Length: 233
Image 1 (cartoon, one colour):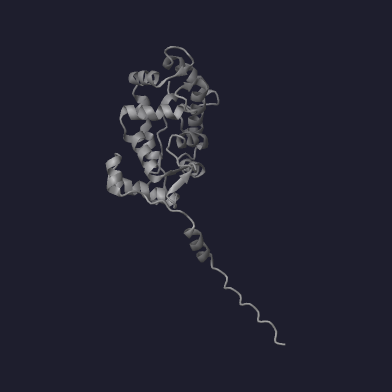
Image 2 (cartoon, rainbow, N blue to C red):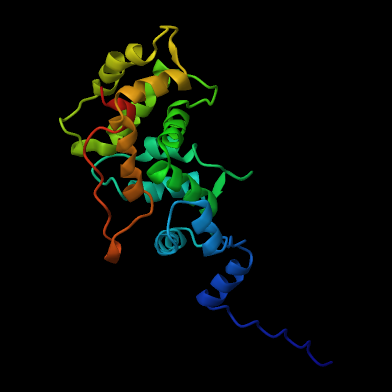
């Protein structure tokens, strides 16, 4: 009796073939047309192309989750730990059901933070410090975010700061912003405070160079070393 015919071995897949198969299962997000993005943001077509190039390099699928955002954000602050601050910034972005942000939403937020009106920037600052999104900023929330800022800037802060610096600075300014002394800051109270010192809003210009705006050859931008946002008394 003739022996059974042995099944033919399937050729082993090459690594590049496996990557192709993987790519087929990745849902790639395609950004809106340049003209539309240029009309809905305060960036030019060329600026959008440059920002998208960096975004696409780090996020090939066109979407980024919080962990990916932290990794990218941290590249701009090698002198400190940007993990916690990146978490607070990420939460200010519009996210899908999977906790991801698209290039369009990222670009819209970046446009507001870096080139929006004073009112738009004020809304962003408030949202950053209003961690639980209840419409109020508590002293603990402010301490948490300011601490994250100091951790991120690390050795770049001038003057140098220690572990108590964040809490001390918040103690100095919180009661000044909280005009009715009820232990929480509203958007109206924050607006009144900012109107007396617009450098708080101007300090957000650092975001224009921090978020995905890279120099050529992979070098990172050096952010300002002054204390940003509400951490400055």
